[in-house]
Image 1 (spheres, one colour):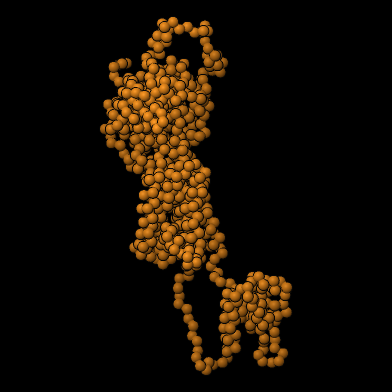
Image 2 (spheres, chains in turn blue, cyan; image 1 turned 120 degrees about the vertical axis):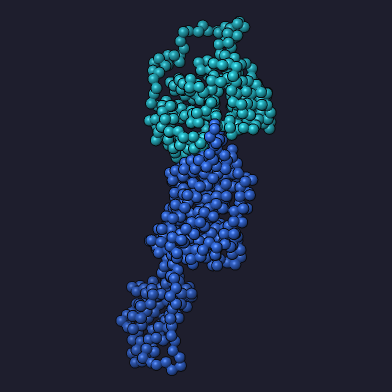
Length: 363
Length: 256
């Protein structure tokens, strides 16, 4: 009795137990690691190419000529051979192919070749790109041996960092992983601990309520950070995910992850409090996670959304986590540079926990 | 046994829920180092009374002192000197028995060797098993092991033998008697009168939230006989449970 009761020891014992339990729970591992990794793999392999325009070569077209040779050198254009006229026509109508080209030797003399290009109204965007590429190409080919009379165009490109699809997708997936582990994980754990009377047994020990919440929180944050490090490393070493300042960038990302997770866990506490049964947890959680999954710039930039939708996107906490993550990872921003995003997450945090304290149930 | 030394003292305990009164003014003392039984039908208020003493529930009125501490002011001090086995309780999912023991050691803030605790209840062979995978008797023994972690002065056992087979029940009796012999006071609830008669030094009968009798089992039986009561059927020197134990053996079984 002389020894005072040690709250820290109790909190850490709970954190350790909870962490072990999470690591052995298949659903937690799947949600935190497998889902984001699958998306990253898919987009990692898909992305990186930028725009591709499909250009079919008409059957019967001359293939050995400077025009086709030059086109084959252009990255943007993907040449399709071996299709017959009917196939090309259908593909054109569907817009799968942007245009068809037919090159013929000019029997009349100059110019040496005639190139007929037929575009499709089903793929106007790509058609326009193709049109300007081809115009440029023809100009270069035709003026190869001619000195410019009016002006000479000198083009050069600034060497910038390559912004790959992974640089957009990975922070979004990381944010979503944190959102789902924060909301689903917390909601399920507290609901089931309450339901199976584990918490009641805890209350028969001297442990404080704060220790229970902190212990669980530490375990979940620890687990989510392990997941985040794993995702970042896979992205970096297999898909060239940009980490400008290396380890410092990773640490900044992890700090952001903690901030985001604390906010998202607040949602989890709310869900565990208002859910009437275990089966109502997923739908309620989805109401919180799905809109953010779709509208918070996880897959697409918010700027691509219609203007009436953008204010909704800009109200969601995940938007700001994603935004801050991207700034930190790709632009090398420090935490102070993303204080605006952190502030908005903090406001969400305060609001969420005010509600959580009201609706959370211990028994 | 010093009969005058009450370690738990309950006075005029009342517990009202919205629509009914679960406990209506009961008073009793539990003496140090005895096994005290709370007996009575389901819904009589046994569990409510226990949970109020265990500081898990608020009382409506009355006074309860546990080893000198009041439940109103010193709930956390009381929690440190008692061990509680709940009638229905769960244990943290996905953990084995050793890990659960470590968790409880942390929750009580004590240093114990998990294996030693498991040995006390003869579960050392199940150290790596999950709680869910245990048999009914093993679950109850594990629950009792968790109540012993903080070397409590008093342990509360709420229907520990319900649903167990005769061997498991007897094993648990031996365990409970051993715990008492180590100097711990035991408060137990049960539906089984043979169990109360075997185990308890004193019993209280609870009915509709009131104590209707409180004495040693012997005195209660003698009083009934003195009032002229006679069993309709002559009691034989053995009963069917004796036959069962005799036929199936009393030894400690792997699965009970």
